[in-house]
Image (tube, each protein chain N blue to C red):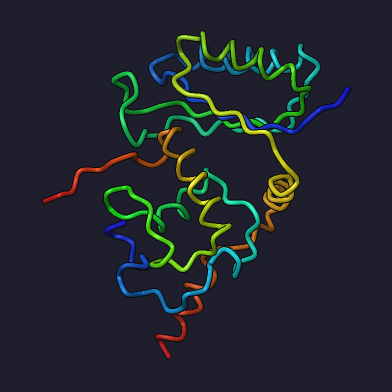
Length: 83
Length: 127
């Protein structure tokens, strides 16, 4: 998000490796919103794979987790762009 | 009887008094026990701010629980949650082996850390 210094779109992405494979994460939990928030932009949209470097399998899991988290009101569906 | 491992999270109306809240929580837990299930872990997150308003409410009382139950029990539990006026949202997940491993790691506090890499990078930058 906008205040996230490690956000991939802030040019902080050093490697194009999948961060989930690297960390050895098997299942992406919708409750871990701190992780999910790194993969959505400030409008609440998911970032594409080409930006984050996430592997296809993990991207699918991630999208499921984001949708579950949105349903449970843990992360927003939409946020109005502040400007 | 074959039992599966499930996770259930639900959001309760935060306006209710504490007694009423714990009453509902134990009502749901009883429901699981009565339908031949067993609760493994009940974690009440408490009142949290919602990311968006549900029924004009901006906060909700989150309850997250893990249980083992036969498949038929889920229908009964979900029906009861659906018709309950004070339940804003509920989500039941059936755990597959991957998720179970994740759960066990979390229970042991050995979840692979996602943020480790970042701290390493910071150290490098300081050098």
